[in-house]
Length: 201
Image 1 (cartoon, rainbow, N blue to C red):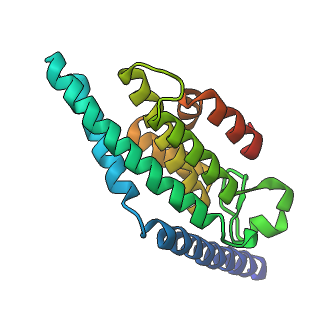
Image 2 (cartoon, helix red, strand yellow):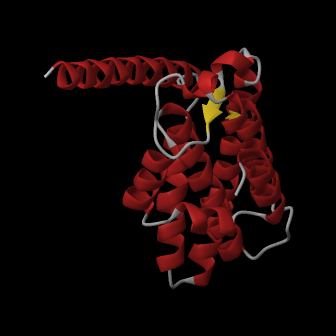
């Protein structure tokens, strides 16, 4: 009986610590993102891509692509500024556990199994900016595919920072019907190489 009580006490303590840590991270990231319209721009782009791909009239399709170019540039600018601001936060607050499940104090107990979210967001900023400027010289359709992957991977990092890798992957799959592996495979080669070097795998 005493062992059962001890196990319950440990479990409750771990849950409280984990919830407190996740709330701190959500507040930290939300406070930075709240200064920008990144999420709204992402939604507009996603809807615009779908509308453009469904458009049969070539002239109308070109007009939509042109409008989307402006939205992409605005998103790249805002995310670049967000990444720069987040980069000024103390590293102790941005270390993120690579463990698949969220464990309380994991970033402190297992420092070698962490990555710096500031660096991850800097990678995303470069990837999104390159996609917006069409650095790879892609067709509009392929450019939209690459930009979507860059944005999905960035969202995955946000959820990973706030919760855990497993939760982030589950949310990516539920929200965009895209696996983490597919998103990583679909971004620009430079993004994929830098991201894998940072988080591993």
